[in-house]
Length: 435
Ligand code: AMP
Ligand code: GLY
Image (cartoon, rainbow, N blue to C red; front, top):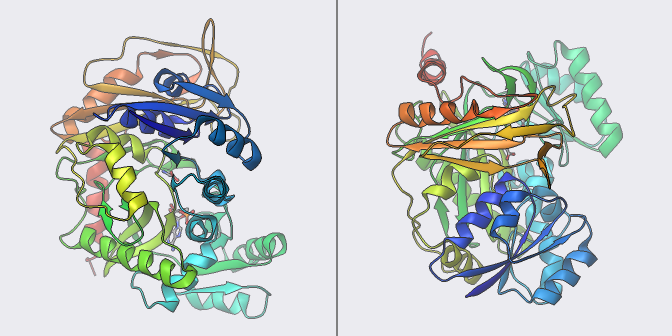
């Protein structure tokens, strides 16, 4: 029986908890959480409620429960150095040290690292600490992206033609970022289709999970505001219908080189999950960004398919002897139920009723409040339904059959995982080759 400390309380941590509990080794799970997630609670032995940025409270709980190791789910405690804090009390973590977590917490760090080590996939970019040459560089790029340097949940990124209508708007937003953070990243805009490739990394060995596609826009047809992700899908062959031969290999090669570069640059091994946001572009694969953790929702597409003992995978990440990891050849489609008004003005504190979850569908609790008389919305993505089947079509019908079972002031994207939307992605890739 292993004792494991898990930090976090979203739907991602629900699936992490469930997957650790499935281990044949047996698992006593201790959870440090900032809110009562009923799915995490169902899997846990003991929990502590506290703030995720309170390193002293995290250390205190860890010392009390003496886990074999810790797993940190969300980006904020990882960026704040929760792995370093736990190491101070002798606990190793599946999550990078703060210095390695800059891979996610600083966009400038990652762009500069990739450039310094000559790794492919980078757009043209410059990191500005003053306004010198800024307007000229935006002009030179034509189509460009302005990125605030720090954890902004994707909200600090503005893209020309989408959020920025002209050079003046781009310059003004770049100056806003510069004044707030002291620096700003300006880069070339990629044209293509995005995908997520997450890998288990022990510092040296990189083992990929099935590729996943997320849908960031709030509304059907990719309209509306950017969100944390409204839903995702993955295919039975672990690739995606719009990818070309060699795309996943190219993305894998970038992650291997970046893991190596992090060690050379910091003297520390990255141990945890490297989650690459890539774009399939005309000439191959572009690197949009890295996250230093599992994706939410992507974790819920891949972990239910994990055949290898998850505790063994975690222990090998820590020991540095990670080998192959097996996943079932199934397709998954995930649809998130979110409060009406999400992401700008989400309904909160309202009760939702959840009907019976159909066979073949998994349900994960996200931002909800479990009270004695039921489940209440707490303002962000509330419930995830994952259909798992042999084909994307069947997985989509399963997920769709489940979302309707929720009653309350909520909505979801019906189009995620449908043949029609997937075909549109395939068409975008085809259009890159039309002169
Ligand atoms: P990030 O926080 O870096 O993932 O950026 C948020 C979103 O902005 C991404 O999911 C992309 O849709 C978009 N984005 C970021 N960088 C680029 C780029 N170089 N080219 C095109 N789109 C981008
Ligand atoms: N799926 C988006 C994220 O986890 O950042």
